[in-house]
Image 1: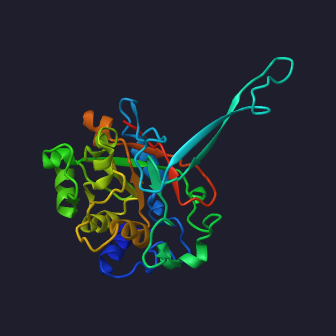
Image 2: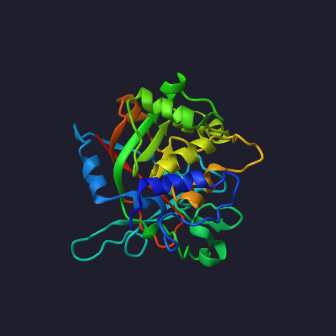
Image 3: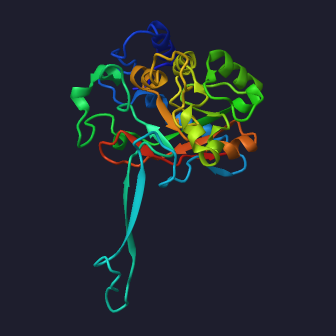
Length: 309
């Protein structure tokens, strides 16, 4: 059952930033979907009204063996000829074909992080402890196969415009002040059920300077994460490989934004989103469409969301 935005906001404000992730979900003690509860058919219909030109934008990047990734993640594909593996034609019509075998980590390229991806001290979303759902043969909860499609209003905040530099420098943290200012300058208001994306220009480095690309990045700060979660957004993403500012605001912490969004609030994370064409066209809001692969028990998924304006 969907809950009012006020309840989500109150939940966000009531919990100290420094507390552990083992806190109950505002959507109920049995909930496994998190902020996806803020989606609705009415939200889809409202977002569909944003389509004015019919132009589509792929937000996923091509993923292959040279895609920069957080180690030891990698990608490999093998193409096998059908039938006997040697390409022997089948039947009187001499039918031939190919299959493919992909060996890859799911957390590579453009991806969605599910609620089983990161927690605090082995505690994950909705006070779920690792020994209750983590199995080497697949998650028993929070798998990508359990998620409904994410179809809603998308919002793009162009942080290169806000800071006046492209790309935005590594370690630059976007918090409430910066997010509100960027949204205001673009004439946007972030709403419950939205997907929020940041354009930082960082993705350009993935090909031109992959070492710099992976060494750090601009991104969401802790205050910004609490702020957006309190607004009831479903997912937050960026054109970076880990969404959050790296090195982090507190150098003693490791990926501090991930556990806050995933384990505390149930807000999904979208990484390596290709926002370049949207930013070039000056698009601030659009219909966001994602039907993630429903691979049973997976923690993450390689994705190609589509923006439609």
